[in-house]
Structure formats: structure tokens, C-alpha cells
Amino acid sequence: MKISNRIKIFSLFAGICTVGVVAMAFTTKVVDNPPVTGEVEAPVVVKNMLQRACYDCHSNKTDIKWFDKLPIAASIVRRDVVTARKHLNFTEWDKLSKGEQDSFLWEAYNMINAGNMPLPEYAALHSNAQVTKEELAAFRAYLETKRVKVTNTIDTVHTAAVTTTNYPIAPTGIQFSPEFRNWQVMSTTSRIDNTTMRVMYANPIAMKAIKEHKINPWPDGAIVVKVVWEKEVDSEGNMHPGKFLNVQYMVRNAKQYESTDGWGYAKFETPTLKPYGTLLTAQSCASCHKAANATGGIFDLPTSN
Ligand code: HEC
Ligand code: HEC
Image 1 (tube, rainbow, N blue to C red):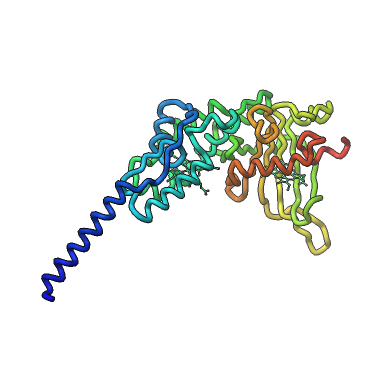
Image 2: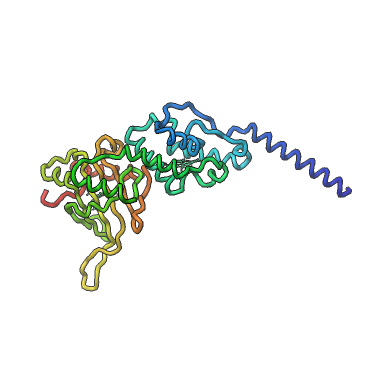
């Protein structure tokens, strides 16, 4: 066979393959779009951003591009969309409680802020999916209007700290603040495990509730913070706190945190006080704290009680 004939046959073959792939691309069904039951509500800027950057995966309005239908790509896209919808679906928003909706919005904000969402490989192909600084700021401003407001003098200080600093915020909307250092120590323990030391602080609302035996349920605004260190034992057998490990919050708001028995949970890990886990983590915090039902979800009350 002459070289030129081989080239002709090869080009013909390549041509057929291309036509085949393109034809598949136009016929492959990647995912279905089930009916929208209820859509997320937010100011226009925020809503537009969610639609543009998140809806392809987190909604029943997935817009599949031709290149998403190419072999291999199609199965990746299908897997992403199915998983993403299971985690968070902005068009089945009515299936979530008010508290869950707010928490998911905070988690969405954190995900974007951390550069985890939209998925980087998706953003690389969909150039308009990137969330702009302005959009992120508008999202944050909107969420600030939804923050749980706890009214007492301590919390005015807390709010001031929040607005003047950039402390991390957990998926449940709870923001770290060093304010707890001014609160009373509720208890200390190293009961459950032997490797850490823990100190619990309670804010004035929580301390008052303990004193008045009004802890079932705890009043809204009660906050308990647990600080955990590694336990160090020196050569003489004395114990003292070693490496600072994490700070854990329980913030009482019966309505906002209905799905976790009225307590909002957050954990911040050192050294950067990075918020730990997702909303599912908060569910697992709550399911263990159910064991303390008799005392309203709090395990370690002051020993005098
Ligand atoms: C290309 C698909 C895709 C896009 C676009 C996308 N996500 Fe995701 N998202 C996923 C997948 C997949 C997961 C599940 C990740 C896992 O299980 O590790 C997820 C998980 C999440 C979660 C965690 C939910 C939970 O259960 O805790 C949040 C929050 C989230 N995405 C927010 C967003 C936001 C906000 C946007 C838009 C700015 C966005 N995502 C865009 C695919 C996507
Ligand atoms: C496996 C069970 C379990 C899980 C899961 C759990 N906790 Fe606890 N938690 C406890 C116990 C037991 C105490 C009692 C104090 C101690 O011994 O450290 C406690 C104490 C606390 C306290 C001090 C108030 C109290 O009840 O004494 C806070 C705040 C707290 N946990 C937050 C969290 C957060 C946030 C999470 C999820 C990230 C979480 N906990 C997950 C068992 C659990």
C-alpha cells in the first residue's frame, strides 16, 4: 500500500471516530433534572451567583454542556452531580428546616471562601463559574443579617470583636471569639480519656441557668465552650496542659438549631483555629450529646450541682 493511501484510510478512520464521538455527545443523557420543589431565596446578587456557579451540580436545573457529554467526562459529571445533589440541593430547599437552610448557607460561604467550591476542575472548564470578591462579600453581608443575636452585655463585646476581626466561622454559623476567657470556668475534666486536659467555660446566661436550675431546656443565648490541651506529665508526675489542640462551642438557640436538639455545635482546631468538619459533624456531636439528656445536653456541670 502506498503511503498516501494509508494516510487516506487513517484520516477516514479518524473522521468516523470524531463523528461518532460528537454524535454520542449530542445524544448521551448525563443526568435527569427532577422537578424543582422549592428554591433557595437570597438577594439577587447572591442568587445569581449560586445559579451561575453552583446550580450545575447542586440543583435540579443542571445545564449540561456538550463537552460534559463526551465519553469519560459524562461519567465524572454524573457522579459529581448525583453526589452534590445528595449533599445540598438549592432547588429542594423547602425540604430543609429554617435552621438547616441557614447552616447550609454558612457552609456554602465557607466552602467558597476556602476555594473548595465550585469544584476547581469544574471552574477550570466553566470560566464564568468563578465567584467574584464582590459576590462573596455580598453573600457574607447577607449572612451577617441572619446571625443569631444574643442580647446581653457580654455579647455586645462579642459582637464588637466579631466585627473588628476576622475570626473563623464554623458551618453552623458560630464564630470563634476569644471572649470566653472572661467567662467563669464551669468545670474541668480529664475523665473520658487520659491524654487530654479540658476546661469548660460558661457565659453569664449559662451560669445563671445553672444557678437557677433552669437547664432543661437551657435558655436561648447560653454558651458553653470547651478548651482542650494535650496532657503533659513531668518527671515528678505533675500534670499540666501541653499543646493547645482545639476549642469547642455549644451555643443554645432552640429554633435555629432545632435539628441538633437546640444546640449549635462548632469546633476550631489549632494552630489557625480552622473550623472542623461539616454540618454532618454537628449532627454527630448532637447524637453523642443526647446521652446527657437529663441535663439538657450538657455533660459536665459544676460539681456543686
Ligand atoms: C462540578 C460540580 C459542583 C459544583 C459546580 C459545585 N459543587 Fe459543591 N459539591 C460537589 C460535590 C461532588 C460535593 C460533595 C463532596 C464530597 O462528598 O466530598 C459538594 C459538596 C458541597 C458542600 C458540602 C455539603 C455538605 O453536605 O456538607 C457545600 C456546602 C457545597 N458543595 C457548596 C457549593 C457551592 C456554594 C457551590 C457554588 C459556588 C458549589 N458547591 C459548586 C460538587 C459541586
Ligand atoms: C462520643 C461522644 C461525643 C461526641 C461525638 C462529642 N462530644 Fe462533646 N462532650 C462529650 C463528653 C463526654 C463531654 C464531657 C466533657 C469531657 O469529658 O470532655 C463533652 C463536652 C463537651 C462540651 C462542654 C459541655 C459539656 O457537655 O460538658 C462542649 C462545648 C462539647 N462537648 C462540644 C462538642 C462538639 C462541638 C462536638 C462535635 C464536633 C462534640 N462535642 C462531640 C462527648 C461527645
